[in-house]
Length: 493
Ligand code: BG6
Image 1 (cartoon, rainbow, N blue to C red):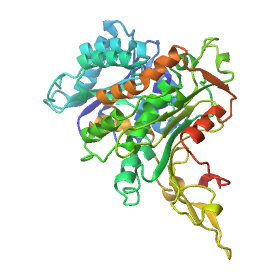
Image 2 (image 1 turned 180 degrees about the horizontal axis):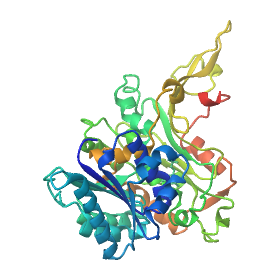
Image 3 (image 1 turned 120 degrees about the vertical axis):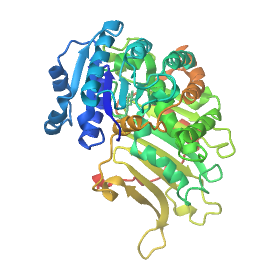
Image 4 (image 1 turned 90 degrees about the vertical axis):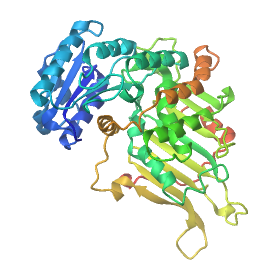
């Protein structure tokens, strides 16, 4: 990335998100030469008392952080401990950033400050106010033109509120402090390789252009499954539940890219305009289109209240009222403690009219985009079974990334998004109006759940989730399960 001095300021540096996602992403970018390595300084700020070395060891202790290269840059990590609600800490932080900038760039160079808020939601507004007051880059105007090419950008992580009203409160608070082009609302699903491929797949292939509509598509599923429970995050999770944790953000973002119209161009505002437009066409959610579940044993977590009714599983059918999608059910399914870990988009096509192979068929055509694990895209087709008999069978055209792109390392979502922030590209970040519509869609349902009007049914850990969800899928969404065929990722063959 061209430019001058770069300070990455990680607020909440002693937390889990910083350790598992943000620091590794920054170091990986550093390692690949995407950062101005000799002009970079990383500042960690949090309440815990720690020395620079203790923070470095904490980061180094995490999984894939190989010592050899992390050692080479970990001296560039400075830790500042301070309370979130006292000015003194931020003044100290600001002095340290300025001193780094003076040492590395003097006064002539453009300087860049990236603030990453990896914090509990309760302290967001407070920390944002402090950052705005004490730590913004004097080499850029806070509201207005970047005079010297310097900038301050602020990355914020979900949860962005708990419903429409609280999210709007947070948005207006942040809106008073930062301009929309300084704010990067991260949804890390937008940084995943297959999600980034969606627009290319849909709009650069003649195969898909004429088929991608209600005339040909029977239903679309967007699925997130984890084969583990809340794992120590029960306290946070219980307040939010699976719809706020996964569906309202990650899966809805994927839905936008699957269903939006072609943007005029790839400029961020054109793409985000189309996302907002399709979200506005999503119909209110009906109770009969929802199945909620809670896995047995969820309440054994000491951080979860014994009488919790929070759903850890949800399957919801959405409808989009526009010319392209009228009548097509979109099934958004997410759950914890299920039988496997995967995230995928499954597009099921309608039956062939007047089908002469009907009685031999195993299932419908499907186009599957597997986000994780083992990124892949495959099309389930009916073909002739090789041999002397004229027999139809289900097979696939398979683009499995591990096989096709053997020398390519697929970047972590956070790496890509942090790099986008440094480059000033907001395409893969959530705009304020987009966030608002996302909450408008789910808030009435969430309130009905919070008022106890919809109940979660128990399901066994390690299962497919409540059987009612399969009924919803088959009966209300018209999904036709393929008989006797399973796609096996090449890594397992
Ligand atoms: C987070 C959720 O946003 O996404 C977690 O809070 C979930 O509950 C995680 O485990 C899943 O992310 P990924 O990238 O592992 O699919």
